Image 1: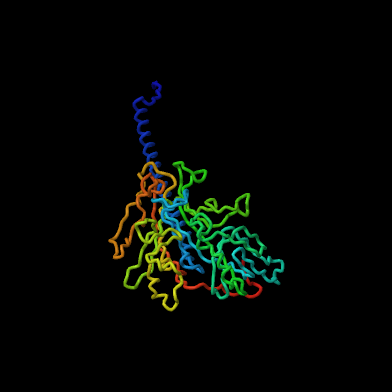
Image 2 (image 1 turned 45 degrees about the horizontal axis):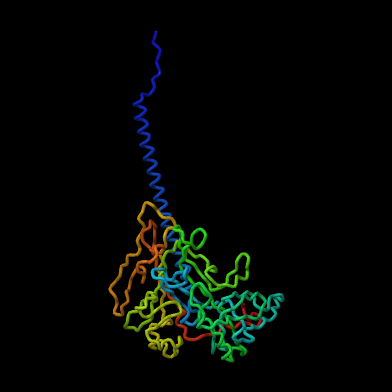
Length: 436
């Protein structure tokens, strides 16, 4: 008779060995998964910051390309060096800001009368196709809106600013009475001194002559600001954003006409994670001289000083006028000097960073500059962040702190800057006269 078979289990040593082998396999799988997850996260962060930088440049680029259309070249592009939005002032080490102006091609109205207090537009004729259409303004005008009033054939012109909200249907547009010397020069407020020429409407009789027209001028101010979960604040976990301000009193949930104050609260976000914005001007020059490349700076030791409307030119006589005689406009010495009408390109440089720090990296360093030899006129032809030195505040220091970063640069040609005189809008038929 065969003895019964006895079932045999694993010994303790076998269990320990099997457990150890299994643990090693699981550890390897886990490490591989974690490594792949980190790589995916790193690549996702890189893609995100590149997309944010491209979005920022694309948005600003569209505005720069239209800069100066129907607007005097001396006020088409205004840059602010080292602009701190929280103090609304220049603070060394902060990103630059830039303000763009251009004429709105979809708005124009005939003027019945104009003076320094108000503009009265003519009512539109009845449209047989739509007899119920509004004959006054067909779109509202907000506080802070820039208007350009053109005498017949644009012999004279004046830039003015709307004082109060003007609803659809109205024909009277109240004008801001702030005198140019008192108009604040800032990217986050109402338009500055260059757009308060209302006194000209009293001094020049042609502004109330038949054929006078008013058109709208659009404004876009771009700057960088830090935000936390509750808005502007001082907590360490803040995220930088590229913001845009139109110089208008924008509506709120409870105040569709605005709150009668034009301030930082009227801004809108454009792109997340934009840590630095640097602006430079490429200026016209003689044929035998290299173009001037001016990193926007408010350094009093450097000339000129570029800060918004306060463009101190090398030659004070160039302050007189932006208009150059058409017969000599390409050879006039003023077209080859440090003058805002000579801007041929605007060079924008942005640094985009990840919104969440990665504890496994030191962080990309984009502050190191690679420069060529200075040109004869002292211009440095290449520097990653233009005139930016070491930022005085850590929030805007594009190095370390465990963030991924990318730097993108674009030089944009505003092709309307060669304008040397104002021009009236294109005429329409009687039934379509106007547009605003």
